Image (tube, rainbow, N blue to C red; front, side, top):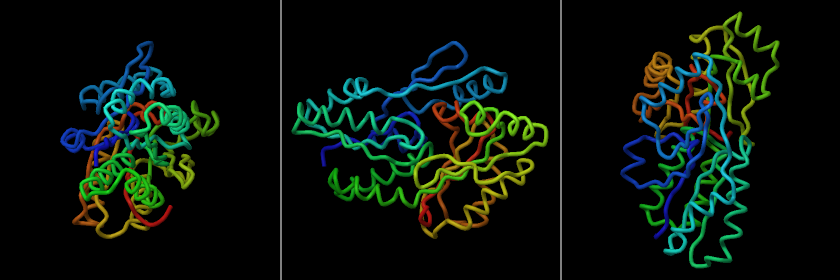
Length: 288
């Protein structure tokens, strides 16, 4: 079972689990104002708080894609040693990452026939990728081959649920998901959009709530409808919204007392597009 498990920097994973299991991370770049930053590991809480405070102060943020050339650069040292890589990519519905990884894998297959880069489209982001990475590690520990592990993850993807609330619609406006007039009205009325990553890996707005408490109730309603007993863990990922995250944790424990909860600050690769104050519940549940 000589293969690595890799994610890109759009993932959020429990830091201890990430380190203890030698999960490989493919860097992605983001900008904060005029500064370009390469996200090469799970960012520290201190650094992430600086990022979201800067957003709150009006700094513009954006991200860049991983090119096929960069994939070659990252993976060739492993393939030369005969080590294959199971790579969980950011959703193809949100990024061209999966397509670029497949292009790189195809070109590398002829050069390194003894090892393989095997991309899996997670149709997910942030903690959803973390849940799948944890599953991939457990599958490898059970003795699953590279291909068996990939097939199991593809089945799990169909049951991966993401429920988001967004505090500031201006970030959705910049991404073209809502109109300028809708964003302006939402700001005045304190309307919080509710979003889901759907079965195509895209991020539609599925509802709106007036105020954070009402938005939290909406997330919990979706969680209660779609959760399944015994499915661990649940990820709560947030963009420096600790009070909202704590409330979500409290209410989830009331609904499912024995569940394992991972709370993490959101990766800047995703946070660049959702803005400060975002909060999410991510879990394996009923089919999307």
